[in-house]
Each structure stands twice: as structure tokens, then as C-alpha cells.
Length: 202
Image (tube, rainbow, N blue to C red; front, side, top):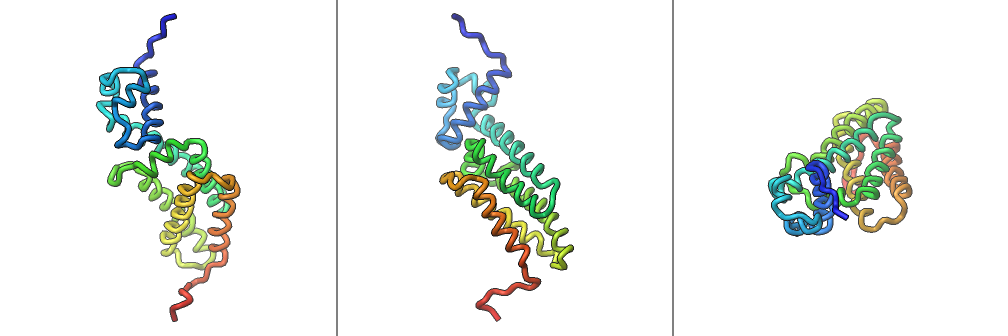
């Protein structure tokens, strides 16, 4: 039986899928054009034809992952109470780690600093959104709104670093992890002092 030839678009999508898996498994430096071509059962020139090389394919993979994760984060922060938004964004990130592990691995372990779109730029977007939410919450509670950005950094950092830890351990279940993150963040926020001081300082 003769195998049906792929269209150009189908071949491109196949190479993106295979490249994504290769970058997650081997890293950017370890995933060669030869390796990607071999996995796709095509010649190296086919990869160059579609992407101009490994860098071009990697850029497409990164951009797709960024768009997917940015959409999840933005949707999670769009509506709901202050606490529910923290819950939603925490669970959204852990769900992404669970369902799109390869993509998360590529973003956090292999994304090059200085790229226009990277995991750190996504975190900055999330921090800005959380900062706006916290500024409203601070105003409502009579707290200093100028400190909202500081607390947003801490909150987003907590969620992000815990997600990276959970990427490897996968236990307990994501809902349990999310509940504990929110417990720390929310109960810490709900009991905040107006002018906190370290215990060892006067």
C-alpha cells in the first residue's frame, strides 16, 4: 500500500510536534536537525525548507507554548473574587504542567534569556495583572496600593516555583497542591499587617 503524501501544512505541523517532543527531551542544544529529521522520517533539507533551521523551528514551538499558557493565565485572572482568581490561576498553571508537560519543560528549562517571548515575559504579564487585582484589594482594606506590585511578584513567584517543583514530583495531586498554595497566599493576605516588620528588627 502506498503511503499518502503529506501536504505542506501537514508536514509543518508534524515537524512542530516532533520538534516540541525533541526539545523537551533533549534540550535546545541536544536536539539537532538530524535528530528531528530522523524522527519525522524526512531528509534534513525538509526541516530547513519549512523553518530555515533548528532555531526557526524552536521559535515556532516557543511562540505556540507562550500563546497557549498566556491564554490560560489571562482567562484565569479575568473574573471572580480576589481569592477565586488566585485559585483559578494556580490551578490553571498546574493543569498546564500536567497536560502539556513538554511545553512547560521547554519554557522553564530551555527558554533563552533575552528572547522577546519567554517564560519570564509571561510571568511579568501575570505579575502586572495580579498587581492590578491586589491594588483593588489593598484599597478596599486600607493598605498601601503602591506595595501591590511587590506582593504580586511574591505571589506569582510562589505559584511558578511550586509548579516547577511539582513538574518533577507530581505528588500530591494538583488540586491539593493548589489548595495549599492558596492557603499560604490567601491566609497570609487576609491577616496582613499595615506596616509589617521583621521580628529581629526594632
